[in-house]
Image 1: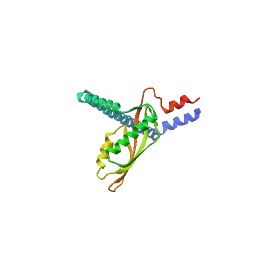
Image 2: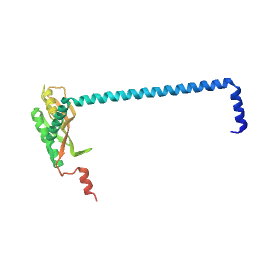
Image 3: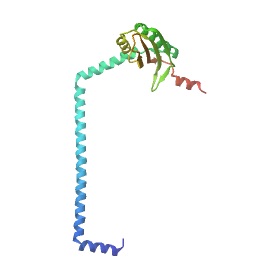
Image 4: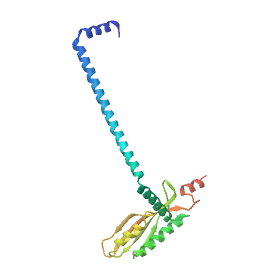
Length: 202
């Protein structure tokens, strides 16, 4: 910016009181706006900090209560029991045989008439290299008034045998169509299908 221009601006600033007041008001408004923003930011930060402090105190109080330790140990024990209940298999054929036998026995306990079992291909469980899964279907005729027993029997098989689809007709000897997904643990040293394919490829 040239000297004449600066001198002109300086002269206008010195000789124009209204201009000086307008700039001063603008600066005051801008300063107040900045202070208000800082105040709101500080208040929000203090509230967040207070909330975090309350959460930490609550967690510390819960952790200090002995019953939570007992519950955690109980949950760990129950999980270990469930893990031991999971069947260990050494081949896909054994997986298919296991679910075939289970569904056949289940059909007997439910007094199903004309039961048929179909088992699909065994698959890996994504993210769990030690597990395999298989879908299987059971069809038959369910005796009247036996739905509750059926549900109880299916619930008893959880969590390693889960119902994917259940269809029951509304007549006396209702038509039953049941699809389940079963999970099994690989025996130590048994590779997954992906690993086996990778080793077989040149």
